[in-house]
View 1: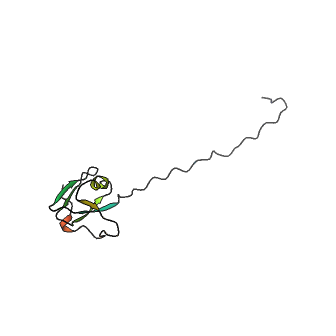
View 2: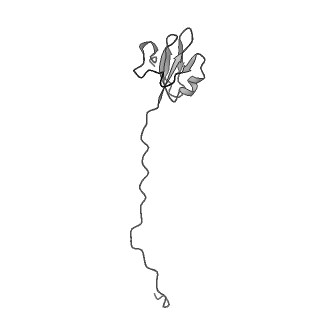
View 3: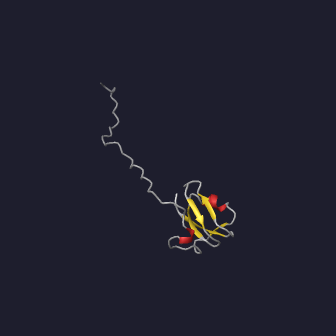
Length: 101
């Protein structure tokens, strides 16, 4: 087919550029938040998100709570969130272990 004497635009013969696939988000385990029980008896609380049962056996018992449950636990009377520098980094104490489900 003729183009009436006009010159044609050059054809780009390079393959189309592919965008790199988006990186899959890496699984990050939820952060643990430490709470201390300040009540006078014991407290049994269920995590609303994880459905995990947490047992605070005595006054002063500290327990690490899944970060997804932390907002609800902050609203429970006699539980206070412990600052990260105040919390223990070792495993849970035997007196404040989660209850078996």
